[in-house]
Image 1: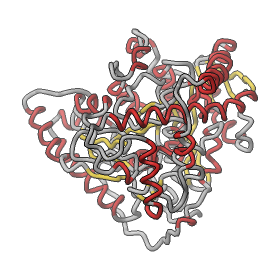
Image 2 (image 1 turned 90 degrees about the vertical axis):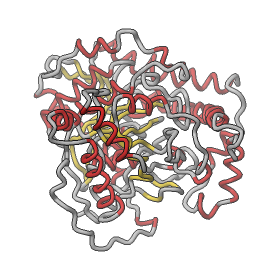
Image 3 (image 1 turned 90 degrees about the horizontal axis):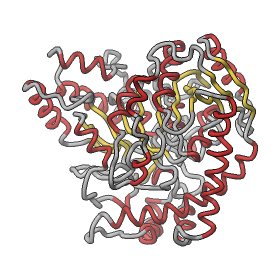
Length: 513
């Protein structure tokens, strides 16, 4: 969960002003960084072309990114985005090179180095902890489904990224980008500003060119928010498009994983690898049979020309009209038809209901995840994790507590009327009377403006694209829409991206200005 993503991408303007000085950081002179990183801003297609031509190997590419992580993440500005390096990364890259020499290319990511969030299971030498000390040493029995798909497509898993512990839903007043295991991730644009979260490390790693692409997870803004303030592209798919099996859960109604990249094109490549049916996640059975075919039906250029775009005004994100207005100018100039759809004042009442759903589903989900770790796992229930945190207060709770955990533990089964009523209310306000009604009434291709929480509550897709800047930190522009509309949203976002070209590398400034 990203507690700061309230109402709109534009609400992030107050997030990026939030300084991390209360954590006691002291900023000294930064180590000079190499300005000639050979793969800075490289795209998947560019790297694949070089490897196909024989001028680059996966092993050399992987080694370069590992050196970059050592220089920028461990040294230099110490971004602290990568919580763990995969000790087998170079060996895997070498194997992929051997396969390529034999004429065997696994897929679109063959030899491409990626990072994944530390709440996504890998059955290898790495840990899967959600940033919690309680889960250190508890080995998953298998890769998460999405990790299997990445490997099948030829990706090199470089390592795991830091995150807001337990995906930002352990306690009230949590710190974005902080975990007991990984410490504090820093915003690469202005180091004393929040990186947002919970996929903090994934977004920071992509922004700072520590990998080609990364995987984040979202329950309520946790991909979109850090991607926005990280100056990168973040895509939250429709719930069910990407299997959640093997992802440490918060709420099955809202949880999903998605790609974080530097370009919309790379996000599209990553999504098509990640998406796929999985018998261990029943939500994937809802994916339309023609989902893949829809990619052939959307324009690859000038997608905004003639598109009907609805502007949703968020009552919770006032004071950002200038930024939204600037984005609308880009849309109009591109030939889009702009439709003012007003606001959804009733949506505020869905907030408490959403939290209720998350609390109920978290208890069930975490207990199920821990049960899969086998009889030798030292923790088998959420209650046991709560006890561990209490017993290790100094290490686990020096900054905030575990109120959400404690409230979740007190919830009953998913047959409770309170749960069923809350879930029905959220679905009605976010879907039936929210995105669905707006798009059908106004015949829209997409919505922009206030929508982070709305799309998350609906379980519908959203994508943020680099756009503006606020006090030295990027702010993204958000597109969202109806279920399974990823192809259309990405096409619109790609056109917007080409017209604005707002993505820029971070300068690792100690403070602003």
